[in-house]
Length: 339
Ligand code: MRU
Image 1 (cartoon, rainbow, N blue to C red):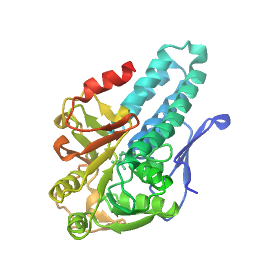
Image 2 (tube, rainbow, N blue to C red):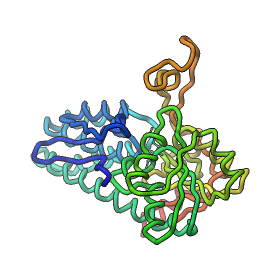
Image 3 (cartoon, protein in one colour):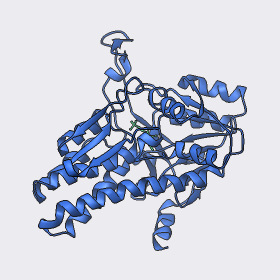
């Protein structure tokens, strides 16, 4: 059975995080006792994946609230500065701020703890709903390429893109998955290949540069990825390498889908050019397994995400259905919230 990515131990006031840096070699956990521990765990990618980051941050504010309202606000600020691209982090912090604003000081810790638990449980329900809609898009004997890790461990459970594969299997469909290794941090190789193998899927690992050739050689039924932020015109930020996969999919007429909770749609963000893209340390690129794999002193550019233009995306799979893009996601969001 897969370990839980995030577990709140209420009686000890500790957030237990699966240490994703150590996979696949070791299933280890990191115990966070305060909001700074959680902020650092997000920055150093002990916990990663947009929904998992959001819920971890929510618990960061719970722990800070033990020291009062001022500490809560300081934690919100600190946690907001950890990783800029995934909008789920900011969406979650807004929810926690609203909860704090509606609660008297004496009850703030209990109210925030309850809210964070709600967000954690809702995330799993949302992923199951995404899975159901997405599974209908896949035929039996589907061959699917995925990138990075949008699985159970990137969320609070079940996963978004990998949740779609789980739901397809629950419908009785046979699925073959190709996992892109996802340079430079290898989330595809270290995490997706591991998660899918643990869960008994038929998974084949490829390097990122093999995906286009694979599409030319086999009938691939879909490319299925998660996302960190979707602008309101449908432009979608996800792990670096997603854009080139979408370009190759368009060329080979392979449907390209992003599976996301509705909260990943940033209706304030007009288009992909406004999405902040995190740049990470050059070490991630020049070193492999801690050893230099490039000449010392070489210049490096290391954006952690890219933006896939809406016109390359055939559908955004949400918990409320599949959105065909381009479309005005802001209007759609408004309509969904009226229902
Ligand atoms: O840098 P990471 O590993 O946090 O990036 C994760 C991704 O890009 C995922 O595809 C995305 O967050 C969706 S997770 C359900």
